[in-house]
Image (cartoon, rainbow, N blue to C red):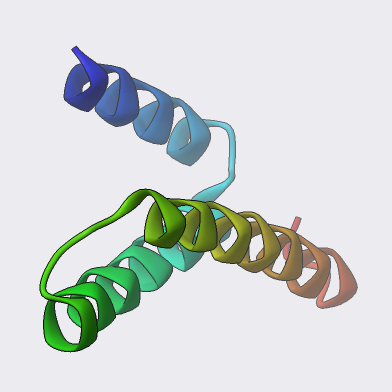
Length: 72
C-alpha cells in the first residue's frame, strides 16, 4: 500500500511541476540506501529518521534553487 501511495504522490508532484523535488528525494534515497547497506548492514529506525530529514532538506533546497533560477 505504501509503495502505491508513494508512486501516486510522486506522479502527482511531477504533474504539478515538482520534478526537481522528486529528483532530489530519489538522489537522497539512493545515497541513504547505499550508506545504510555499506556502513550499517541494513536500515534502522535512526537511519530512517536521518533519511527523512535529509529528504526534506533536499526538497526545500531544490524548490529554492528552482524558484531562484526562474524555473518554477
